[in-house]
Length: 318
Image 1: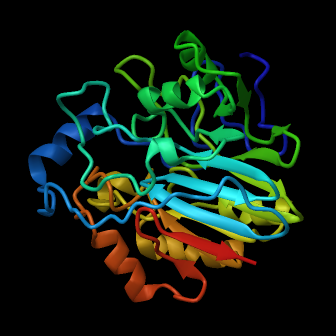
Image 2 (image 1 turned 135 degrees about the vertical axis):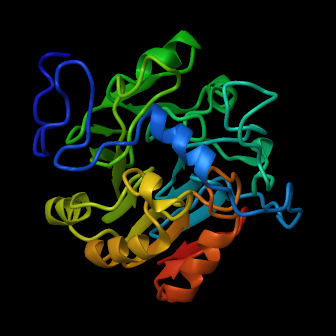
């Protein structure tokens, strides 16, 4: 790991032992978590909301069309040019290492696992349980049709569970399959699955280049200068998938998650033709209510270019 230097064309983000957010605030620590839990209260939300109309995507999309389906949370199915890509897939009941405790889903997935088409690539932005869900990844691996792409130092866990083939990407690196190329780009976040492994693996977003089109999947990220860096290096994306939820209280969450207002600013900085909101509406991970991010975004976002989809809903973009 000593040869990880500057993420190729992006700022240095590895100190020889752990990854970090360059020129930005780092994620809050353990004692801040205790303060958050002792001093604030989450907005009440229903324990389960039965309003999802599940859909069955087509096996593929040919020609120049782009079909985008929000499954749930940050899980999005991207279909274009004969390829199918899935981001941060989670079908589990809890975003947790344990089946009996941890954030429980408030809405069912918008697509049943058995209704998924062939998945060419699975993009995983970081190792938090709501983004790297091993039971779901194991089910996808058992289908034997997917390549898994993870940030630097994220492959070992998947390989230990016989999930693969898996490829690691540092910021600035890329990986190509038959119909598209995936570029790893910066995000402002952190990683951890336990007490002792904090920031031992990287976090990232991805730029997908296919059919003369750029798609940006931001993963989990705070607001920062990386949006301008990404636009400068790659150009404006045709589509941006931007997180809007788990943002309160701001003193705790602002170093790792955007709020809806910042998501709109990111959309503008990127000059994305269309953005779609992710990371909301399925798991309540912070103090903001389950549907508060969606309501706040709808009140401020340009509705012709920043879309909010329900679980199972699709958008077809030219």
